[in-house]
Length: 227
Image (cartoon, rainbow, N blue to C red; front, side, top):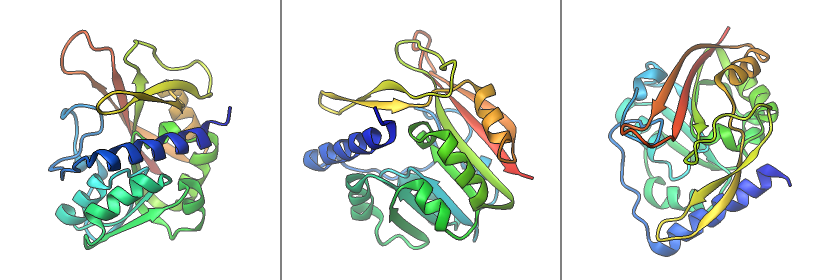
C-alpha cells in the first residue's frame, strides 16, 4: 500500500462527489482548526498582512480566501486533488491576494519562494512527515511560523500510533458512503521530535476536543517557528 497516492485518489473522489452534488462552499468568518468552532482562530498565525503565506492542503480554499480577504495576506493555496482545486477555482478564482495551485505539496515547497507563514488544517496527516517536514523547514524564512492541526483520536477512540507509520481511517461522504484514507496519527511528542530534527521548535500545542462529552474525536494544534 502506497499511502500518499491512495490519499490523492480518495480526495479526488471526494471532490468529484461534491461537484456532482453541487455542494455549496460557504465562506468562513473565522478559522476552525479542529472539527468544531472552538479553540484559537487566525490570531495564532500572527500578523499576516502583506506577508507570504502558504495554505498546505487547502481543499476548497475557504480559509486561504479568508486570510487574503480579511487579513490582507498574500496566500498561495496548494492542493493535490484536481476536483478540490476545481471547487476552489469556481468559488475563489478571482479573489485578490489568493493564488490557487494544483500540485503535490512537497514538490511545490521545493520550488517555491520562501514563506513567512505555512499553515495546514488537517492536511499534514495525509503526507509522510519524513518527506514533508524537510521541505516545509526549507521553505520557511528565518523566523518563519508553522501552524498545523492534525487528528489525535478518531471516532472509534483510537489514539495516536506508536510508530511513525500511516494507518487507515474513514473519510465519510455527504449523503452516504465513505472512502478509506491513510493518515499519520502521531502523539504530540512524536510530532515535536520530528519537527526538531529539521530546526522547527514547538512553542505551543492546543488540544481541540469535542465540545460535548461522549465524542472521543480530538485534534491537536501545533504552533512552531524556525530558529
